[in-house]
Length: 576
Image (cartoon, rainbow, N blue to C red; front, top):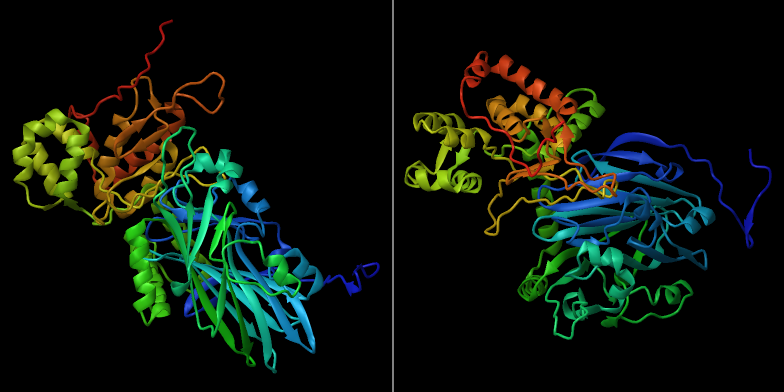
């Protein structure tokens, strides 16, 4: 029970009791799980995914890191989870509103500590059951306004922040706002440089605006080097806005936020140097009762001159920008559902939490281990590349016979063809072939020692068949995946035993290209040669059990085949 009232100046400190609740809701005809009054919980961490190579790790307080493919292609700085939590209000969304109400102008900054202290507010977080969208909402019961923003991804456009403000009152309200994102990284910035030389990097930042297209470009004035030589940075991060505003200004930095807070006039920024990147829209509107104003900010990393020119042309000539954004967001969701469906991740029933949880479990399983996107159909071109990567001598010996195969062949037909060649090396290579995609290492800001890379597309835009993962993680995921694709069980067994050493050790990491062993370092307790076999043998046991269940007797036949090997690693057993 509150003993007495606390004041901030002449304003009583807001201490309304709010109960945390969870429930399913529908947002724009899609099911989300919502935590009401999430600000009353300790900060927690979330992973927002996509059907493509987007990645986002975000705190429940709104601070985040995000980008494409890996941490060297970041839109916001990639830090460890504790630092991301600490960057609340410093990285990601930032919104300021001047609200004219009852002959007063009120300053409202959603999602800040000051907002919660001065107003009666509710905060809600909603995450799509498909895991690729997240929406933050603050309801200001004092001002009778609701501000909502969500993060969405688009394979074509990048990361999209969709925002909206709603008048909950029965009378019109006039609002002027500054809304956008802050701490934007320029193009051509690798993780290591940002992490170690972030202050120096700020001095090289250059933020420019193409006003006709509402397009901001965030670049380096040059690549920081310690040599007397020219070093141009030829890529930029692009951020642009779209909304139904009669008049709009743009800011490229935080420099004028305090001017706005104190009621001063701000001016558009077109060229800002040596400052952290930000992109804000400044606009005014009058909201009728229960009316909502919606707008978009769209960000993409590593854009070269040609990509920027194409984007500027699109913004200048496309009459239906919002429709194009929404259409590609929906297409990405549809493709993500198709990926999860491949691994039997779709179910339905009268328990919403159950089938949503099953989808999420399956999604994260295929994100680690990958998925057989073409089921049991083998793409000959990719298989030939696999043979070449594994053994160039075998490739040269069978090159003409490989090229005589049809462009697509079933997994079973390929194994039968390999058996007929009577070549044990070729048969071993065939068994080890796993045409997986969508896989990446179990890396995120809570596991910074695991460096992930989301390899979903080849240079020509076609689907890239690739996988990588820590030994323990990937075989755990393959155990579940093999229930959906039992004809690959023996191939997974082959991959397991052929990557183990004679004394029973397993590598730390396994990829399509082969195995990766740690380099021992007596001064680093995290560096060791691999996993010991007795700790990992349970995974092999599960695959052996599955093989016997789905293909009785096949293991007995494989035991007589000389198609299994030990891993050749740069270590030798020390004699007694």
